[in-house]
Amino acid sequence: MKIRTAVIPVAGKGTRFLPATKEIPKEMIPILTKPMIHYAVEEAVLSGIEQIVFVTSSGKTAIEDYFDRNIELETFLERAGKGELAESMKKLGSMIEVTSVRQKEQLGLGHAINCARDLIKDEAFAVILGDDLVRGSNPVTKQLIEISAKNNNSPVIGVMEVPKEDTNKYGIIDGEAINGSNKTYKMSKMVEKPNPDEAPTNLATPGRYILTQEIFKYLDEIPRGVGGEYQLTDAINAMAKNTSVYAHIFEGSRFDTGSITGYLNATVEFAMMDDQYKEIMLDICRENIKKYE
Ligand code: G1P
Image 1 (cartoon, rainbow, N blue to C red):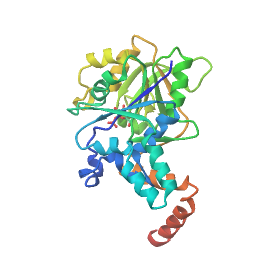
Image 2: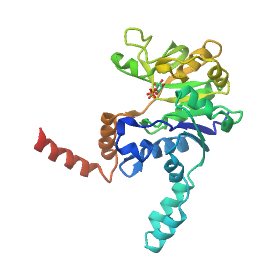
Image 3: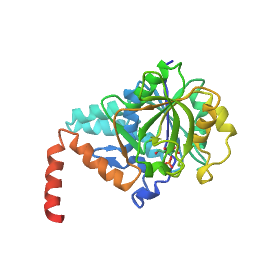
Image 4: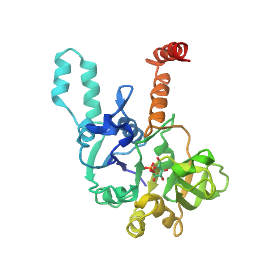
C-alpha cells in the first residue's frame, strides 16, 4: 500500500530556544542555509510522500509560507540576474503539497496526531517529528515504509539503541526479533519515557512512525499519560496488544535538534558533511580549539 501522507506536528512552543522562538517558530531556525523543518520535509519527499499535514498552533504561519511559492521573490531574483537561485526557490515552493490543521490546546503528541485525522482520509500514513533529524543514504521513513510493506502493511515504529540512562527521554519498545532479522522486532509493548531501571529495552524511537487508521480508535480511548498528556506511545502500546505492530532499527545518523547541544552538534556535522562547508568548518574548529582549549 502506498503511503501518501506524512503528519508533522509543529505546534510546540520551542521554549528551549527562547528568545529566538519568541517571534519565529523553532522549526524555522536554520542549520546551514535551510530551516530545520526543511530536512524533515525533504526526508518525506525522498520517501515518496506526496502530502504533508502540519499540525500547527498560532504563530506558525511562516512554516506554511516557506513551502509555498513566493512569486515576488522569484521575480526579484530573476531580474537581479540570479536565475539559479530563482529556480531553486521555485522548486522549493513546488516541493510538496502542504495542508495544515490547528491543535488548539497542547495536549500531547497523541492529541496532535488525532487532530490530523480528517486530512489523512482512509489511508496508512507516516509521522515525522522534526526535532529529530536522521541523515543517511536511505531516508528513514522510506526504510520504515519498506518494512511495513514486507509485513502485511502493518504499523512500524523506527527505533535506535540509546544508552540505558537515556530511556526516560523516549518512547521505548519491547518485542522479539522476527525470523531471520536482527533489526526488525514484533512489538509486545511500548512505554513512554520509562526510568532506566524499568525500561524493557534500550530501543527508543526518535519520532518516526508508519501508522494505520486503526491508531485513531486507540487515540480516542487512551487516558492522559506521562506529563498529563495524551501520548501516542500509549495508543501504540494498546494497539500492539490486538494487532501486529513492528519496530525496526533504522540506518542513519540521528541528531536531536530539539536541544541546544544537539542543535550545535547538527550544525557542525551538517557542515562537515557538506562539500561546500567542510573545509571552512574544519578551519573554524581548529582555530577555536587553539584559542579556547
Ligand atoms: C516524543 C514522544 C517520544 C519520542 C520522542 C522523540 O517525546 O512522545 O515517545 O521518543 O518524541 O523525540 P517528546 O520529546 O516530544 O517529549
